[in-house]
Image (tube, rainbow, N blue to C red; front, side, top):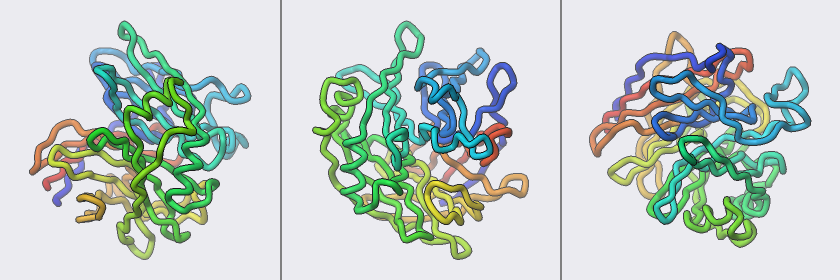
Length: 306
């Protein structure tokens, strides 16, 4: 693969406040939705309009944003994943917590009704427990950060932490059943978790790479972004020494290419969205987490020649 990175737009709401800790990006209506892992709301960017807040969850103990300095980090819902989903001609965006604590085990299914976002929230604690069992990890270190649709399955990716012996992995959920559970038509405990697998993405300068998001390519391969984060555990941030893109073919990592630095800094890509592509080239919109609650997240375009 050959990779080029273009631009580095700073993401802000219409009032100038920063879009914090971008963790996922997904198409929504005539624009795209950027999800933050330390907030109860997302940012909706639409053509010809100012970026708007979209509420995903109610405030937690009166807080809308969360960070370590204020002592609210443990309260955050940690929404790390966003994926387009559909059932019987209806479509929506599924936003999912990362796991590891009950606050982080909720799903938000967002659909547009007459052009306005409508959100349904579901407690999916039982599903997270099943995922932890399938991947053979302790529930308190579960860190689910990406998802994509493969056929009629929702493939859900656990980031892991290679430096602590936790490999990246994934499981499959039946997409129709996942939708039913998200809207309350079925019990979360009845959702089956299948096809667990693990991925070895290698290391950069001795720090293991772990998956932060995944998109499906037109040819059937998957493209993952990954970060080499030197952290003691999955909950605490550490220095990101490098990032990369990895092509996954079938159940195996086929190729890994390190992402170039931007303005001399590591581009910590946390979310990917496919803008255009075929079997020879993919154009991606990427959002990054700068690990600073006062600084806006950044967005870039990435061209990958496959």
